[in-house]
Length: 230
Image (cartoon, rainbow, N blue to C red; front, side, top):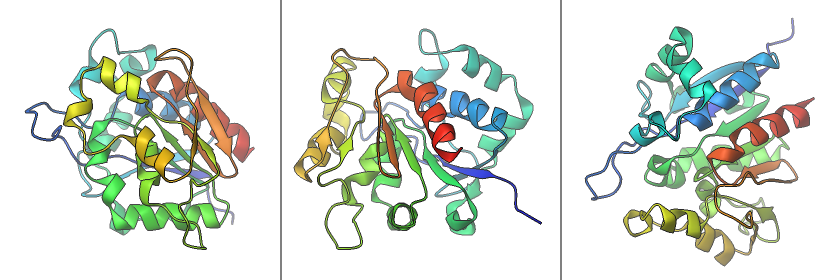
């Protein structure tokens, strides 16, 4: 019997924005909209996080003007809310059992997913096997330490996008961050592309890697991933 089609969504377990005293986590729109795009396309979605259990959601992303029809829908969806309160521990999940890996953004992941050797190895193995990996907003920061089988930075010579320096600056949060994903991916040889204006949806695909710039890119990247899998 064939196994169900499944997408692994890996969320951050980290809730503190450096030493700023601010709280963070995963950006809600980047969980909610892809969840409905994936499930409505017939995929089973499994949520995981480094620590398992409740994955923190960035409070700002639960307030206007950052909410969307899908965040409102998800907040009222008992199954969805239970799934992100009871995420699987990443160590208990075999990524090879999934058709694709998806990483929503938010600032929290800069402190855990981006420096987690298990996450980095999982991404390396998936990309080497041509399994699609989609990352939106700050999630492409995970690519900083991802390498190709030959040992070079995976992003060298590849076109990627992610949350831009000017978007971080507009939120006045850049000084609290561990690193700039735009700078670090560029340093590793990536062709970093971005929208002409902040907050506009931008999604690029280079081989099995699909990256999106910001929260507005969430519906586009989710559809791009589903179309690629089809």
